Length: 361
Image 1 (spheres, one colour):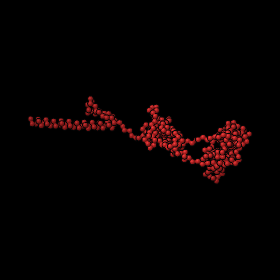
Image 2 (cartoon, rainbow, N blue to C red):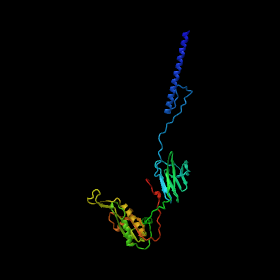
Image 3 (tube, helix red, strand yellow):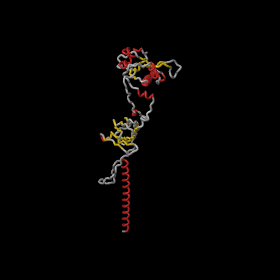
Image 4 (cartoon, rainbow, N blue to C red):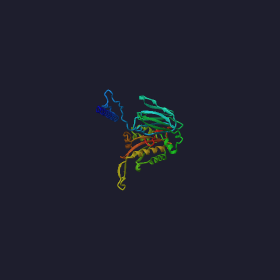
């Protein structure tokens, strides 16, 4: 009897140990299964769990690594004078969808953009400034004339990328304007197309031609020559078919600016060698500077001028070249009429501060 009791106790202890070991093993498998699910994102059911009681495992989404690249602009600061103006800033690496607001620098004053199509904010109007997005990659900025200086900060957004444009208006720009006789002559120059009968003196013509020949020239080649015309009876032949003939006949004198398109000199790397004739790659630049000097000098003398094109239009320059007997390598670059204006012609104000880019375009 005693042996039977001991035998039953041993069986009961063995069964208890077996149940405990099975429970421990089941917990370990469940934990490993949940860890694998969390790492792979795949939902699995533990084989030790009954099919009518599936394991509830939360899906773990993969983490997005990285950050948004900032919006790069063609310029981060735009400057205007007291007269205001317009400027365009380009977004270089994103489409710009939102023009959020304009903040008055140094304050908590904000002017918010107006909603547009597709829930975008493309236009903004505030005191003294307006802006709008064009073609999704440009911001057009307009600033009104003002007597006081202002600074605004425009906030842009594309997705989760942000940037800002600083807009400065300096009202004291006109007060700081520098002037002198040379600058006044440059500003006074304008195109005059009708003249009085008053003649231009030889001394005046020489002064203008001296100024023309003082122009900068590549490697000091000085490709220019000039034909001064005053005999209007020959203009029909010289300027045959030229629609500026009426202007030429009205002027006191006409100057044909001629350019030698070649240069004859020793090679730069061998200055002791014999001269060689070759094309002059900078003659157009030289002639442009030369012509402008002539025009400014005329303005300083109270004379009017108009610069008319000749080369490279065959119907204009070929009759001139033939009538004046120009050498084979010489072309009539342009024709300038000069004389006393028969009426006041005010020069155009071409000052546009928005065309000025600081640091980069």
